[in-house]
Length: 165
Image (cartoon, rainbow, N blue to C red; front, side, top):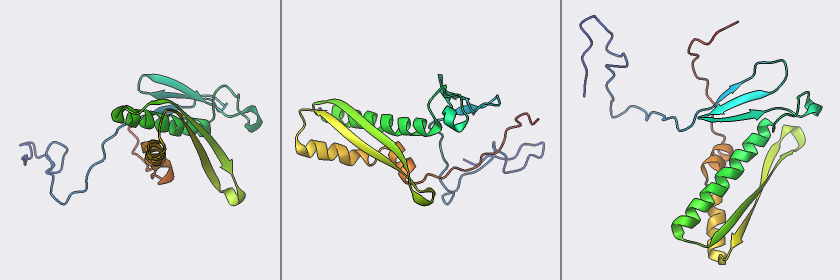
């Protein structure tokens, strides 16, 4: 559908008149959004994710108040919960007897600022070896695993007129 510019002389590329072409790049669709706000001199951050509220902080040894988990702790929490949820969904869909999923995660620092995440998955239930192997294979392709391991780019978004002090 092609729209015509308004009689007021609006440009043909305004949001109301943009025409999609077959060669246009696919557009990104936001599937999650978070607002992280730091308002004090300390390191505590208030986080809003939908209607849910979280906090992050740094340990006292790093100058924080140790009032919440660290940002790396939140990253590991996201990875662990995504892994557990994805495996639970898959097992339910297949009607496999998966009772419990435990995901143990660690963030390790190495030489020359290298870092890695270690993950051990415990699957509790009357699963055969093929089912266990399939679940561990699925774990390598969860959305957060792919985002972290694939180094999903973080791109700057344009400011929408936030107050600038």
